[in-house]
Amino acid sequence: MLNRALSIRSQNRSSTGTTTSTPSQHHRKPFSFPSLRSPTFTQPDLSKRLTRLLKSSSSLTSHHESAAKERLSIATQLSEWGEATQDDSVSDISDKIGVLLSEIGEQEDNYAHALDDARAALKVIRNTERSVQPTREGKKKIGDEIAKLKSREPQSTKLVVLEQELVRAEAEGLVAEAQLSNVTRQKLKEAYQAEFLATIERADKQIILARHGLRLLELLDDTPVVPGDVKPAYHHAGQARQILNDAEDDLRDWRPSGLLGEEEDSKVSGSGAAVPQVDKGKEVDRGSMTETVVNVGNGTAAAN
Image: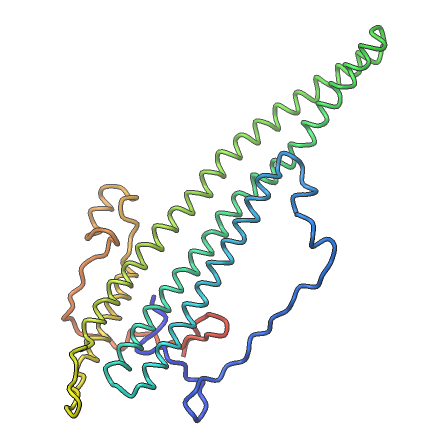
């Protein structure tokens, strides 16, 4: 659902018309020697590569979360600038575009959460790799001891004991390796299936929002005005509200095109964004609109 009803403008304003906000606090991470060490330094060899991958994935998720917050901030700034122009058409259209931009930011934030869920599946593989590493090392250690003992004391009675331990270690290793293989294939598929589905959803929904944004821009008359002439009055406020309602309906009706069965896919019309057609002339249902105010400070929308 769109984070709006009719406006994105903050209601927390001073008497001068400017938005009041609390400066964000930046806490610098204290210097320490452990912070200079790579987290992969103490990892078993088997899980080092995946640990590096998980660290990079965490950084990627943080960047998407930051992009979402910046979208919300830019949307509010655009809306408030438009209001300050004292041009009715610019004020209304910029406000409605701000609503769509804030929802694009929300889609980015949802995508970041999906990436984090996918990362959690990869962590299961990493943890399983860690548990298998001691089994591999134990088996190798016993094998090395047997080789050394055979070269020094071929008739030693300890060889029998070590060989029995090696048999047990190999049996445990077979179980651990089978578990690792199963977990790896299952969780790898789960992780990237979730990421690709989230990528499709984000792309489709942002396309929906962008298309409705272009519809809004068509309502803005950019015909040059000769000095001294009176600007034409703005009469498209109702149409602009309807476009936001259409966008909300399209997001709610969105289905992942091409990923469902034929019967389900046949119910989803359109191409690209897989959006059902909406009757642009229908009446606006004001009662169903959720009044919200974007809180730029923390990138969330609070119900009014």
